[in-house]
Length: 272
Length: 265
Image (cartoon, each protein chain N blue to C red):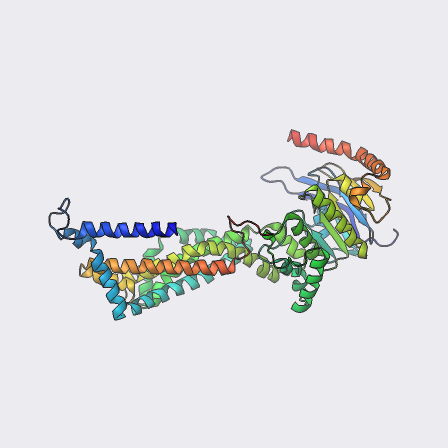
């Protein structure tokens, strides 16, 4: 862990101008977060605490009010724009509805000017890897929610990003599909161990997938308040690991730290 | 099929009523004082169809119809291209859109048919004054739809394309344009109709050829049957144009789910 982290957010503060004379809203305050090369880090926190804000900063989609983002030791300049070494998987559907499955998967290669035939070949290979072989000609609206998520995963991974940013990617799926997708994600990740920053509100999902779980405080002014190492053995099966005593102990420990923040966020939302 | 036969039935009934009420001497007069007055004001269907058949068999209509359709298509294409281009530009540039806002609103609320005489002076009595009128009508329909379409592209979609490495030009080509196109197609049926209106109104106000000119000539001699014949031919071709747009839309918009379509998995 002494090596340069793949992704480092140093002392990040994000303030949003208030609308129509409202006071400015500080979503994230003095947050520091590091992801080592090859490490799978999950960030959990109560709803509306600015998890996605933090991820957008890491992606370079959002310039922080203050603080520094470094990618493999190189500072990410706001002017330069996005984090070119990162792939981002969004919570909402981000597939292009006017492109078929295969056209969506190869979009990134196309943007980079990869030759058509070559892109097509890689795209087919990735469709196979995410279990969508033979579905390349379908449009997104002809696919189920789970299939669309696989497609989005292939679309992101085909560019072989060194850092994978995921914003509650499976939160819209039903429990069964979700566990299948989590296992598939772990299997794909195990192949080449990229760094992952995974945002979720689901503590069980976070523990089952990660090497480390970071707990965020309730907003406004979110920052990490807990950092837990998850030393469960790999490879893991997300549905089975949930039953083990080690998992339960970790869950109890982290939930203890999280509970207060969740209640705080809840109270604040009720009051608003 | 049932639907189609009902539609045809309505057409037959309408024509039958038209015939019944206009044939001199068939029904006792209840409004006009003389037998042939109804026929004078409303024409007679059999004579109207006779005029139409005559037009097509003698080939007289084709030149006029060709001119009108050419004006329509030119007005439609030029108006759509301008609408698309300027719509994209203003939607993507905040400053430009804010600067242009009052002018766009002004031009749009102006009754553009009054421009027809000016266009006749500027572009002469040939086809271009009619095309110009069609362009001003089509432009705004397409423009507002593109503007709206680009403004309502999902931010996630844009963020995703950027993360996948799209440059601003690629963003325009693979996100903004296709997204705007679905809105454009929603407006094209409207736009084709307006291009047609532009062409015919332009001809009506001053021309030497076209279906609008035929109607104007017939009106000058109180030949109401020819006027109705012209109107019927125009209506038929407006329907044809609309069907062509529908076909193109179905070809290009295969990716859109249809409301009643079940997902075939």
